[in-house]
Length: 243
Image (tube, rainbow, N blue to C red; front, side, top):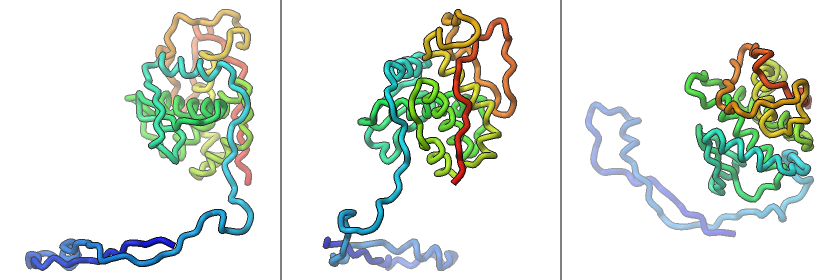
């Protein structure tokens, strides 16, 4: 049991101008604290029934790939901060700045950072069109899924759970496959060792990551087969959205 405040309207005695309607008159009302009353609250331990379902999480050992991903973020001039005030969000991307909630397990931190980096690449460019939120979140989470699987992490149903939270579906995912594939390939090319890349044995390291522009969200890219680095072996974004 707690003491809850009782708030009531305190009408302003100054009459409104004649031209104002009743809606405007109500704006003259102010709120004041009239007192307190007893109220009941419940702790989760006082409830019964099965536990509420929780989102799946990415698990495993990211090894040194987490540090490599952080180095890639810094290489692009993106600041990385840890901020507990963003809770309940795990990560926030704001164009040139990524904030993560502190205290995550390494595998989860890797996945969240990959998600936010995908937002930075795909959704914060000056010439990028503003996509609907469901599309932005589907693209970013699918990139995190591919990159996480690419370094050997177990994603469980985390990606599908997150996409479903924003009402994403197979159609949304299918329309974004080219952007997902291109972005996840760019990230993996930077953090995977050269021997894990297919095709050419020499990895172009003299070119800045920023010099390889992201492809259009609508059309797959057509890179020069001579100048472009070989694509890494990455899993296809076969995220099951069935429920």
